[in-house]
Length: 177
Length: 269
Image (cartoon, rainbow over all chains, first blue to last red; front, top):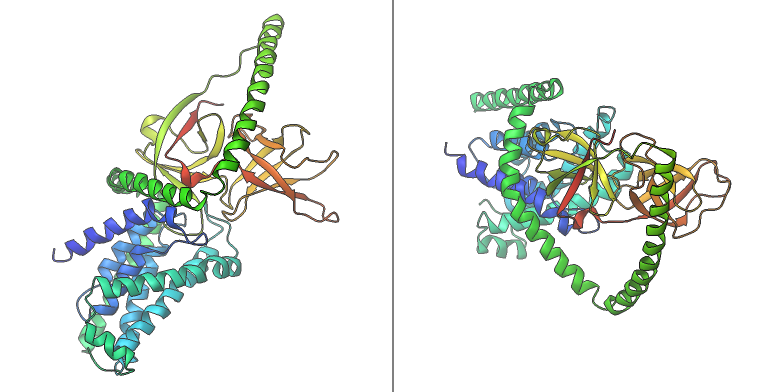
């Protein structure tokens, strides 16, 4: 029940994604609001279950997607799990830089994985004709860039990144939050 | 710590299992009722946001193209004059056609029913071009029916129909293919989506040349689309002379992203 506000917000973002983002595509590609929120949420939130939120976010994305059911439902929890794994085992010392690196890496991994999965499943019914390399270079890389920028924006907006921490990025310091 | 890690593995395993179940339910059709329920809720909320986005992007488009407006206005006036002349000519041909049909006692063309549906959104990913409609099987919509815009412009065809919502595959989607014919040279071919960038017209044999600017209409031979729906205009040839298949770049007659509603053609067959 305590996760209800997050679910409602994810649903709201999914609606915005379907209704608003097509009108504001840059170079034919729109960022993914739902992905950005879930990833920032998992990067910032040090404990507690985020996998369930990611699962539901993926499910909602799948409902509005042109790809076969299950791709985002599978991918978002997997990404969240990987973020938690790498966040705990590799990026402990320089946490803020580590978090930004994680945002960048997951922004690249998200389109890479979903285009790859869609490519593997393309023999199933009613989905776009996909050439993996074509779509990854022309759509995936751009989407990764927009998603990273949007994630950074969410990182600062919704999760109150402290000014002192941002100042420390400028000074090139690294420390634990 | 180890207990916590194993718990997370269990959760992840559970999610993978749930996803596999979802995929199975979806293929077997058991998932359609809850999907329709969620879509119904979401689409009732998304409609105002879609209209808002349309208005804002319209403002940006207007500001971006302000310089060209005077020139475009003159062009449209000229086109309007030409069309009026053509309309008068066609009206005469129509009357003559009616008269001859009666003389020959031919059957009248099949009457189609049109159902109006609001576009409430697009697909959430960047790979395809799907339009979400707020009408579904309850209103008589079914898969493979044609979605058109007022005046007989082809938008796409229905590929998924729930009880109260449906999805249209736009003709500009790379999965879409429509049998078409050029209006003047009467060459038949296939119109395919070009990764959302436009349309490609493919013709196997080119007995006559195709003029640039020639209109393309549906041939109606595929059974999904009524004959005579406007698709677009030939822009240029993109294939080499040595290629077996002649390919032409086509400018779509309408931009799907600027539409607020479409009509679904019911009872064409």
